[in-house]
Image (cartoon, rainbow, N blue to C red; front, side, top):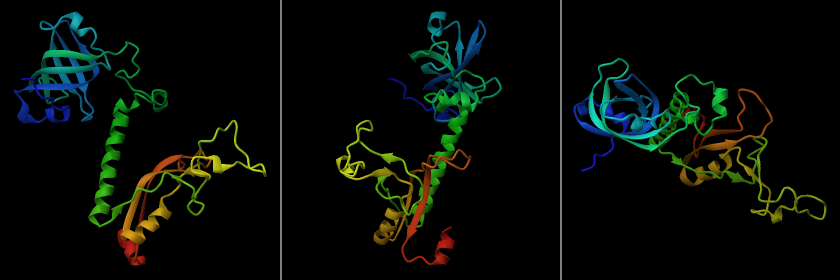
Length: 263
């Protein structure tokens, strides 16, 4: 019977020591000598790597050659207490299957990378500890936001991302159109004819869900929005973002004291 996969975050459970485990993930690094090799592997379930111990008497050089940084593996073996520093447990590999290989010039090697360098590797930067930590924190913050409002009886409202409203002049907007910018239809007075556009009028990315939120509050009593908003101000400051997520609660029958209590 095939072993069921164990996520690496669960492998660190002391109760599993002494058991056969099946783990899958990507190689972070590989080191060793002519007798034993150590593979650091991660599957994204935790920021901690799992050490795979490879006895070179059990594996040929040909089998191990494809195992480079970034390669994807399926490993089965015995989970034991680690004799080395840096980890509590490790897997003594019995079988290794290579799911996918990486070229020697794979850019995410075991070394420090600047954020500017990672900007040029946007498809890979999520694999770094820096971005991994950011996205884990962001997950827990978002989960806490939903818990907070849910426990207070608020309803989560999804407001439109594409809208014809500028929400009380909240900021410059990114326009959304299906029209051919190289051949725009014109009205008799020479303006763009938005009746030919997808929505039949000029539309943009939202700068706020407030207006729809106010409508929701008159129907559901207390709502909150939590989603992406967009601002097109041409401002290159640390406080300006073209896209960010915003929380907007709207409540019916709240007075100023109720507002302060919620805050």
